[in-house]
Amino acid sequence: MKRESMVPLLLILPALVYLVVFIGYPIVGTFQLAFSSPKGWLENFKYVLSSRDFLSAFLNTILLGVVVIPAQFVLAILLALLVNKKWKGYKTILYIIATPLALSDVTAALISYSIFAPNGYLNKILLRLNWIERPLYFFGYLFRSREFLVVILTEIWRATPLVFVILLAGLQSINNEYLEAADVFGFSAWEKFTKITLPLLKPSIVSALLVRTLFAFQIFGVVWLLAGRDITILAGETYYWYVFMNNRNIASTYALIIAILTFIVGWFYIGTIRSKHLEEGVRT
Image 1 (cartoon, helix red, strand yellow):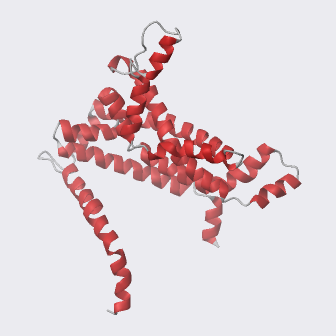
Image 2: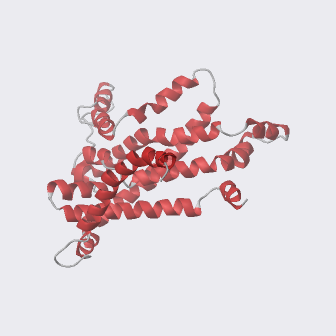
Image 3: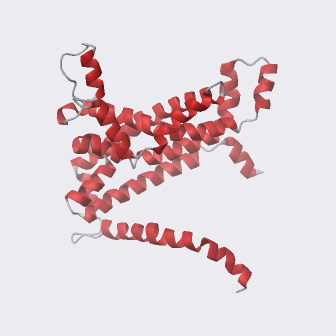
C-alpha cells in the first residue's frame, strides 16, 4: 500500500478507535447481558415487558415526550422568528435564550428545586405577597402531578434552546429574495410564513424534532433528581436496576429497549417526514 493512501486511514484511526472502544464494545456487552439468562435468552425481556414498572416507565416517558416536544417546538419557533428580525438588542435576547445550553441536567434540576422547594424562591415570594398561608409542596409521592409539572417546566426551559438554535440557523439560511418577492405580490405576514418560510424551514424542523425526540427517550437527570422513582421513566429504571438492584442483565435489557425505541423513532422521522426539497434533490 502506498504511503499516500495510508494518510486518510491514519487520520480517521483515532475516531475509529474511539467508536470501537467506547461505543462498539459497550453495545456488544449490552446485547450479551440482555440476552443472558439461565431460564432462556428472552427471559429478561419477558420479565421486563410483563412488569408493571416497565409499563409505567414507558407511558411516563412517552407522556413527557408528547407534552414537552410540541411545547418546545412552538416556543422555539416563536423565539427564532423574534430573534431573526434582528431588532435592536436582539443579541442580548439571543444570549439569554441560549444560556441553558451551558447547563447540565443536574444543574437545571437543582435550579428548579431551589425555586419550587417548600422553602424555595416561589414559596417565599407567594408568602410575602400573602397569596398563600402555607408553603406549596411540589415534591413527594403524594404530589406526583406537581412533580410532573415541575419536570415539564424544567425540560422546556433546559432543552428549548437546542431546538431554537437549529430553527434560527434554518431561518437565517432562507434567501430574503423570496420574502421580498412575496411583498411585491401582496402576501400577508401569515401567508409568507405558511407558504414560504415554513416549507423552506422544513429540513431544519425535521432535524430539530429528530434530535429532540431521540433525547426525550434518554431523559434521566432532571426526572431522577426532582422525582426519583415517584415518576418512573425508562432511563431511570435502567439506572435503578444497575445501581440499586445490582442487576446488569435487566439494566441492559432496559437500555436495549431504549435503543430500539430511538431507532424506530429515527427511522420514522427520516423515512416519512423528509423534506420534499431534499427528495427532489436526490432524484435529480
